[in-house]
Length: 77
Image 1 (cartoon, rainbow, N blue to C red):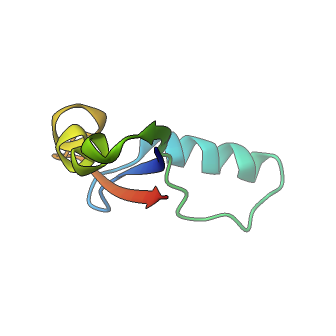
Image 2 (tube, rainbow, N blue to C red):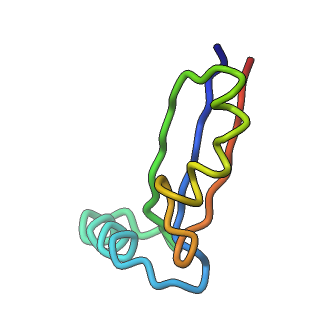
């Protein structure tokens, strides 16, 4: 079994309302040095060799919305 990580973020061309809200809240708390905050998803799973080879397909079909999200897959043996 291998550990797989999938990091999903909004595409740069998509407005990230959640990220903007968090950035504004941080500014209101006095953390004004934070800019361009993007909110995403992080998935971690253990996969066998077959599933590891299917992660791209999993992301395309279910885990991410390829129209508005980018994703990165990291596999660690």
